[in-house]
Amino acid sequence: MGAKLREVRRRIRSVQSTMKITRAMELIATSRILKAQQRVEAARPYAERLTAAITDVASASAALRHPLLEERPEPKAAAVFVVTSDRGLAGAYSSNVLRRAEELFTLLHQERKEVKLFVSGRKGLSYYRFRQRPIEQSWVGFSETPSYDDAKRIADAMIDRFTAGDVDEIHGVFTDFVTAIRQRPVARRFVPMVFEEAERPEAGPVTQYLFEPDPEALLEALLPRYVETRVYNALLESAASEHAARRRAMSAATDNAEDLIKVLTRVANQARQTEITTEIIEIVGGAEALRQAREAAAS
Image (cartoon, rainbow, N blue to C red; front, side, top):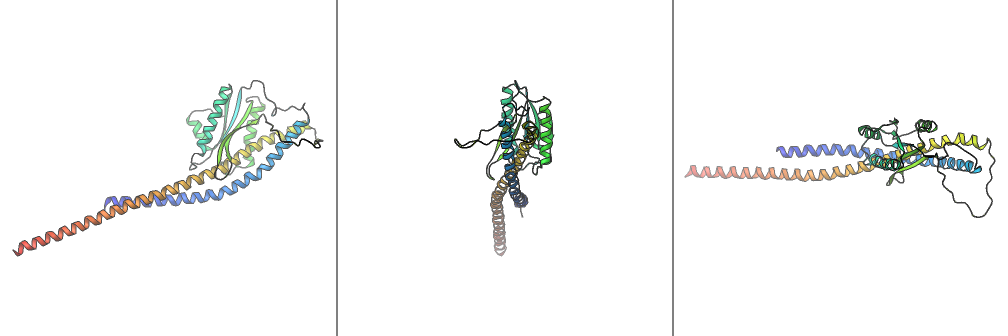
C-alpha cells in the first residue's frame, strides 16, 4: 500500500471519529433545548404578572417615587450586563452578542455616558480581558443551566451600584430565544423601568385597587424582584439560545465531515486504482521481459 493511500485512509478515520463526536454533541444539545425552552416558557408568566403588578401600583398614584422608576437628570454612567457562553462550539452565538454590546457601547458613548461592564460567561470575559476593557464584575460556570440564585447575585450587584449612585442606568445585552431555529441578540434597558402602555377597552368600568400595605411599601418590595426577574429571564433566554446555536453548529460540522469523507473516499479510490494499474503494468512488463529473454536464449 502506497504512502498516499495510507495517509488518505488515516485522514478518513480521523474525520469519522470527529463526526461521531459532533453527532453526539448535536443530540445532547437537541435534548437540552426542550428543557431550556420549557424553563423560559415557565418563567415568562411570572415576569409578565410581576410587571403588570408594578405598573398597577405605580399608576395608582402619580406622587409615588422610587429610584428604580425615576429618570435621573443628566445621567453620567450606565451599567451594561452582557450574557455570553462558558463554552465554545456554538457558532457565532457569543460573537453576535458581543457585537450587539459594542453597538450599545457606541450609543452610550455618543450620549456621553460612561460604560460600567458586568459580564456573564467565560467567552465574554476572555473577549474583554484580551482587549483590556475594565470589568466591574463577572460570573462564570452557569451559562447553560442558570438558577434564580445566580440571577439574584447579579441583580443585587448592579442594584447596589445603582442605589449608590455609581451608575444611572442598567442595561442588559443577551440573546432572545424566538424559536429553536431563530435567536436574536438584543439590548434592553432594565432600570429605570420602562412602562409599556397596554391596550385598554374604550368603554367599560375602570379597575380600582386597594393596596395593603401602602403602594410605597409594595414598590420597595417588588422593584428589586423585577430586576432579578429581568436578569433571570435574560439568562434563561440566553441558555436556550446557546443550546440551539450549539445544535446548529454541530449539525453543520457533521454535514461538513460527511462531505469531507466522501471527497477523501474518492481520493482513496483513485489512489488505490493508480496503485493497481501500476502493479498490473509492472507485472505485464516483467512478463514481457521474461518472454523476450526466453526467446533470445532459444535463438
